Image (cartoon, rainbow over all chains, first blue to last red; front, side, top):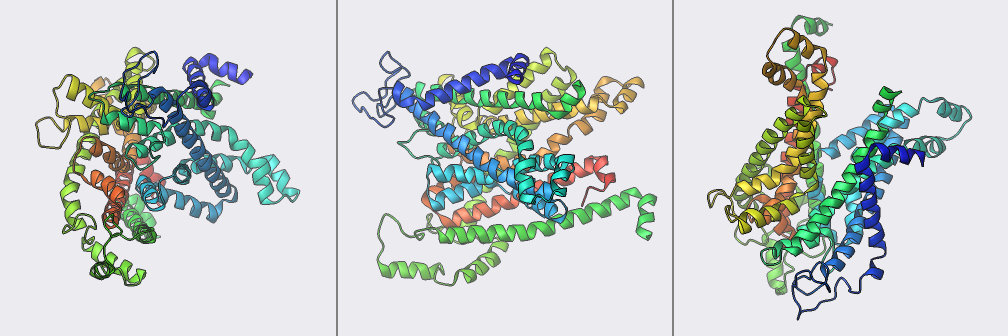
Length: 279
Length: 328
């Protein structure tokens, strides 16, 4: 708690960002209880109506309540962002810590693979997989995470390189602890703080990627809703119905802002170089 | 041993020999990578459920059989892959399944120049805007002229092209109505909005990278020396500091090119530009497998090439990388 209080004192923007994000997550969780409409419920007689007292942010061409669709959309987008980050985090932490801990030839081969994969245009392969296997949300976050772990592996490896010569690791080794045990019990818990900070920066990247694919029609499929789909639908009809583009765009941008600010703030705050300068 | 002495006698010769070695080594890693990528993509595409001719219209078995024979789809996969590779090296990516009578190479030849031009303008726009604002910010750390460009660059990062494109169209194309909203090179001024949409995110990243790089360099002794000698500030900033300060940006150019191709999918779709990005998205929709395969290989090739080029440029410009022997 002291850590958080200190952090927020120095980073006011990060504080507002966290409030915004927690608010959004909270709204996304309780969505079914706060809106009387369903995301797919059509009202063709009404069609696209501008914001009114009945429909807070207006309705789309099929008469679906935009506010409801935005809430459900934020659910899908946040979920894909978080789950993809979780996938990337799992692979990246394992890969990076194994490479860093074992060192030597294993390390150079594993990191060479990371380098090579990093040079490949992975959006292409993402689209390829979605086209071939099918467009589902599960596949979407699995695929995004499966491609997005490279930088995480690098960050973890550098940390582990510093940790593996620490006394407590040597002590564990001298007592005959297995490599697996040392990795899981001693190394990984110690890299988690920087991993979590970096994850905050991965989430907006992955949400963006989801929006990008859904915008092209290759991600989440209508009548499901997501930021990308809403912006796509808004862009198609923006000439007549501006609110369908403007509202989802504003909220999506704010979400990206908030996550980026929070991640940047946390990274600045926990950057070891900075703390060294201070102490 | 002789070569070790040669190292000290003529650094440039030694450097270029090592640079050649470095480039050759990288190229030799890329060839197997390309082969693996092509084979993996090829097998993935062929493992996909449904053949290329499973269309809405049901064709009779005889016609299907004939089609399969025309396109050599009955050969073992490995033979097909071998044929494909041999043809691909010669620039022949086979016929398109969904644009009858047109080959993938023709489609690529018609779309690629447009995409390359778009990407070129976008990267030029991003470099000019990003590097300049990064320099301005780095010269005024903590002041208004630092916060202003950096806040704007944060907007560039958080307003992605899928939002920026439609909103630019709405403002400049529909409400103010001064710029055309679709096409490329058909009406005057129709290249402006796509360029801005594609380039702005990179302008933002370049601004932050340049600011960081410049701040680091400007704090170093040789800059103080240059200033102490009475060199004018423009010369110090643009000749002495920028050479080092632009390094992070140069290093990011390779990945940026890769991102530009991905970005062109969105921008070409929004502005209805017939480049390879739009072809790719449409091919993905239509399951036009040969076209997907061809464009995937092409983009992978381009990306690898540009990553290599940007590495070489970074090595060439950075004397520290030259001497420390990190070129291996």
